[in-house]
Every structure is written in structure tokens, then in C-alpha cells.
Image 1 (cartoon, rainbow, N blue to C red):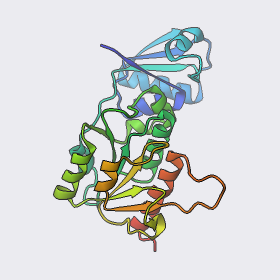
Image 2: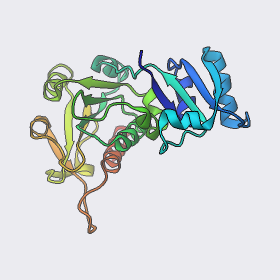
Image 3: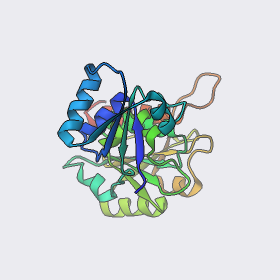
Image 4: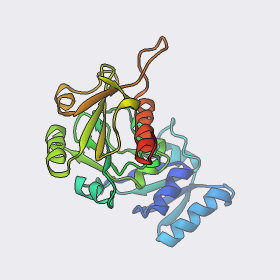
Length: 248
């Protein structure tokens, strides 16, 4: 069975705390076993994960020269995606709060969005199965381990998924677009909601945009006409959180 390798002390520790099926923990030789590394080793022992001491060169060979592994790499089975039903069950009496990503391809943006979504109280993320970033080692790292805590569903047809969530669960879809009809902070984001973000550069696809109940925009006053997808998404997610917590 193919294995995924996640790297970096914080993502590995989060994986162990979240109960991820870590099969082997690879630790660079000669490191002082204190602080976060001591926590990692204790969690690995508690989970029954095998620990192997290897050279730093071996770790670099596994994850690549550009990866900052911090002397720790964990091997685990490929990421297990959730179902939309599992995501909705997490709402537990609250209005569902979802993030739908329409073709985000940059793994760093994807990881940052997972991290922000988890912090903002999003119940889960929905992504397309094709032509979009999936959960990889870089996504784990960029999410600071949040990918182990927030359920992510992969759907073959986003348009159909949106239609089903509207019909069966009364969820409203707010798409973020530069041409949106209203500012993000003037829209009602309190009820059952999915924030929809498009791909870097092209924005929302036509079919997904047509399914959105309303489109919102961010006010832009500088010379640059757009924001990084993860930054823009974070702004809207936190506005939704503010409103859902009783903000004006």
C-alpha cells in the first residue's frame, strides 16, 4: 500500500493527537529529545507507532530538498476523505457552515484555507475530485495540522452537490467574486451557509457561480485588484463567524 509522508514537528504532533494512522515515525539522529520532539515520541508510543532513527539525508530524500522536515517525518496511509453527511453531522444543532472550493490548485492556499476554516468554526470543506488540489504532505504542513481535524469531502460534481444541499438542507451559497453585487460585510451570513471560493486567477466557474444564491465582493482600494485566495476566503469566513456569534 502506498504511504503518504507528512513532515514538520507541529503537523506530525497534530496527526498523532488526532488519531491519524501513523505507521512509522522517522526521526533524525542526534536530536535532543525535549520540547515538541519529546511530545511527539510520547504520543507515538501511546499510539503504538514504530519509531526509527535515520539520517537527515534520508528524511530529505523522502520529502524533498525544499521541505522543512525539522527532523521528523511520519508515514501514514493516504488521506481518508469524509462524506458530506459527516460534515453536516458536525453542525450539532447549529446552522451548517461550509466552505466549498471550486478548483483551488495551489496546495499552500488550500492548506491555509483549511487552517483558517478550522479556526473560524467551519464544519467542513467540499472540494471537486478533479482539477483541484487534494490533501498532500504540503497541505498538511500548510494547514498546521488542521487537515487532521476538519473533515474534507471530495465530490465528482459540485453543481449537483450544491443543488442537493439546497434542496435537502436549506443551505445558502455565497460566492466570492470581484463582480459580486454586494460587499461581503453587508450580506447576511448568519444562517445555513456555504462560502464558495473559485480557483486562483479565473475565479468561480460559470456553472458553480450560477448555482450561488448571491455573490459578494471585497472592497479593493489599492493598486492591486485582487487578493490571494486564502486571504480573501479568510476575510469572508471571519465575517460569517462574527455575524453567527451575534455581531451586528
